[in-house]
Length: 241
Image (cartoon, rainbow, N blue to C red; front, side):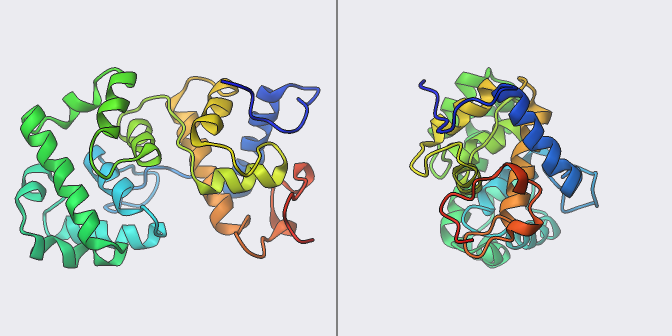
């Protein structure tokens, strides 16, 4: 795949530069402890099904809204495959209403749970233990799971060395001047995979740090550039200064 970077490669090389960006964000925000559990405070991490449900529920909404839905599902005993697969719609939908698009997301959650029950006899670990390439293709074949959601599942629930991309990634790195704002998902991912170790923990933390920066500082409108840990290396492309 062609190199997507717009700027010339820095003297220290892209791999060192990419690590420096991660170091700056980590120094500013601290470790993110992803994927967080709704059942315990950090550094407790969620169980795989909770991570997968969270990855679906957080689509197009803030994490705080998805978290409310997860808490409600957990209290109702529905963060388990069989109960979730068989629960009536009128029971599930009110619980996940805080996450928005609750009818569509209810279908996505229950279709996934039913798929694992029918195809893997309820053994989620058997699904997640499949080879990376095969598992990614299988996840993307399921209704309601696109590249970002699928890659979050691969990395956080499956422990695969995959880094998910999202609108924050495109916004931040196009403003820095590394990517054009029209860059495709696969091109962004190829760049980061080329310049980070093949390590699920590091790539998952990188994605979490990017999302923290995009949520807190590199806002869509009126970004807080003066508070940004990347201010010294950002060209602020498209940002009104």
